[in-house]
Image 1 (cartoon, rainbow, N blue to C red):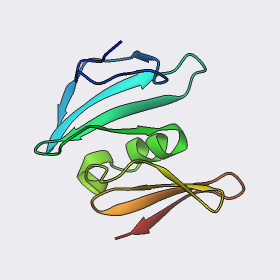
Image 2 (tube, helix red, strand yellow):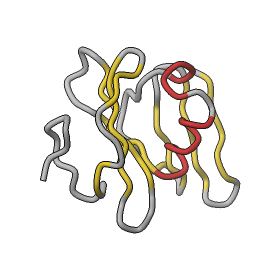
Image 3 (cartoon, one colour):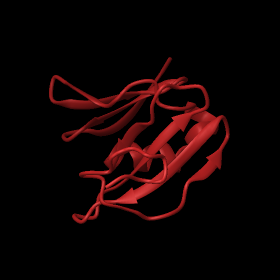
Length: 105
């Protein structure tokens, strides 16, 4: 199954909205069967969309989205037990013990 951006959406659940133009790119929100929300974000000119989800997605939305952070520049990675996702202007870090923090670029 593919989403409106033409990318596989396995594990992402069903689209919860249509593709939206947002700043310097487009995004499509999803909600997984377990309830976790996320989105595929594609910056204009980028080679592929990047998946942002869970507490990092929630923080991205609540604290300014693309206007504050820009678009993601890399997939989320696990570093020493914490989830880290790099955006154009900052990294959002989620630690299961201490919660979310924002690291300016």
